[in-house]
Amino acid sequence: MYPSRVRDFIPVMCPYCGSVSELDVEETGWSRQSYVQDCPVCCQPWQVELTRDPDGDWEAVIKTGDE
Ligand SMILES: [Zn+2]
Image: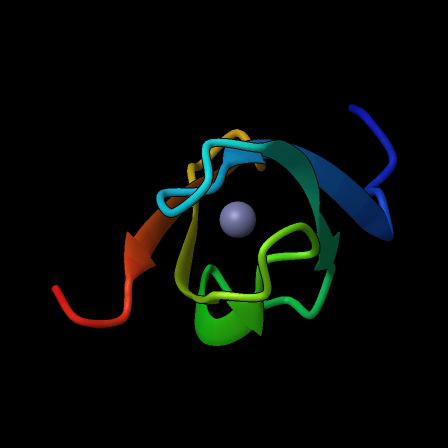
């Protein structure tokens, strides 16, 4: 068994400017998280949805706020 990681980094692409950044995921024990975060490049608001599969891998979906 792998030790549980405290933090993870997920590569994501900004839906506004196309820049690739890394999401900093804090391990909280939740299997699903959603929040709003500004793009570090163009400062547009991301609607971030994080889901975690049974293997413990995070998957990130970035949506624009007006979708
Ligand atoms: Zn951007």
